[in-house]
Image (cartoon, helix red, strand yellow):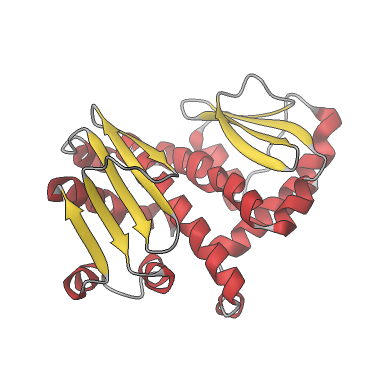
Length: 250
């Protein structure tokens, strides 16, 4: 596992799922209600982005200079340590907003962890199951792009992906696509009408079973539960990158 790649995944895929959590969860919305905070995260030798909380919404913007709270990290390992709870960050800006960082932001990330590492008991609740699966889908699509761009093994697979869009979707559920341009990948959490290839899961339950490693993806293709269309070489190389997602998100 490459620590720099993991830092990109942790910022853009893991923390990058917070906007979707705030969109889907009333509890998350309550944590950011009436907040006006720009949390900048800058990793030396790695990614930099800002989580913007305003008007009960959240979004992720590139760069960490325009922020009200700034968390700098001296290395990808230090930032990854914050995500796994072994490193306590020290802000260099925004001490008047520290209450948000140590209060509602922690509650928000704890809620995200509960959804992403859901217990069987939580998943027995239909609404929780759907929200959790949607968040997992969002996370995995973003992680594919980061691994394709930053991970040495993933870069090899990305180098074989021709320019164009690869649509990923769950039937009657969320839809996203990966845009490949000059072997760089960008995750877009939206449908597209001009994709060169498509990978679609039959339903939310199947997608969740695949995400949790409980069913075999190749077997699901054989039974038609996973539908593949279009440029197979694109899908093959995206699948190779997808195989590495579990390594980073375990």
